Length: 383
Image (tube, rainbow, N blue to C red; front, top):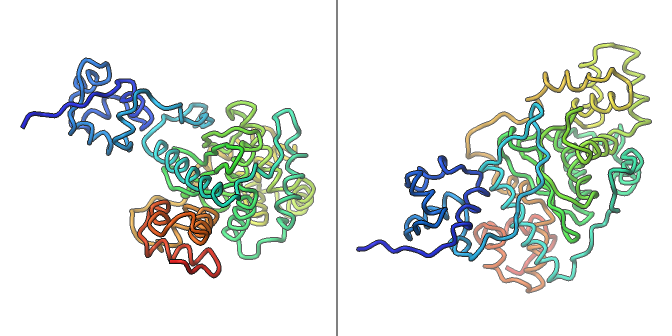
């Protein structure tokens, strides 16, 4: 049977490969093509077979119809603020997948919120990097974290993370959590006036996630999104990253409280690592954040944070492990957030969508969707 060739736009094939984070040499063998054959498809000197296009849908993680577009869609890449040792890591398939999943979930949730007449502008003032991040942090803390103090979370770091995540969600912000390699990202933010989104790397420990959450919240307050990796010492990339780092640290570790307890503990020991560990546990943040805060407030020498951060580089992360295991339902709720699930449940109750659509939006089977919604939406019954 003769091969069936498909008429496609070469620039769309290039766009699909690049946004998947693949070079030609990487993509060709995965597509079962030679490098020269893939180059020919991308320069328009030949057309792909139906089989090659099918393989592209898998390798590039794109729908078949997307590859048939007459031109690449508007650029979906986020501004890249990531640095490792002063350099930006490469864009890869993991990051491309996280960005696409985050955008897809946000778009689905925004559609449901609009149908429910719940779609409202972001409930947080716009800011600029010319404003004092300490002052803005005080305002935000008073608005959404009035009880987030030194003596707050008796159950530890996970309790603090869950409470802070819930507080941000109540502002009309979706908070997702997806695990990727620690060298890929800490978090990303997708700005939209209506229902913006934050995605945290699920491989971060809870105490590290809190900082990333408020760092990404700062990007949304600046009315922009981005992709971030380092907590940030003196080599953070640009004014926006510097401002977001200062805001996040000041929000989670209030100046007056921190200075009081720092003075108290330094009366008893001069071991900086012990001091930072103790204060991190008390404020329910990582000791990276404590070290950054101490340096910004002039309590330790300039350069202390960078010196210790290099030593502590891997401690904010959950060790890599194999796939499988764990509670699927808890993992799903952690991954998508309760606000996403609530919107699906409320839309189902209001007959905005039916059961099959609810399962499709949630990307799970019907019985699984029912249980997830029942766990989140009180009194849920229309299944």
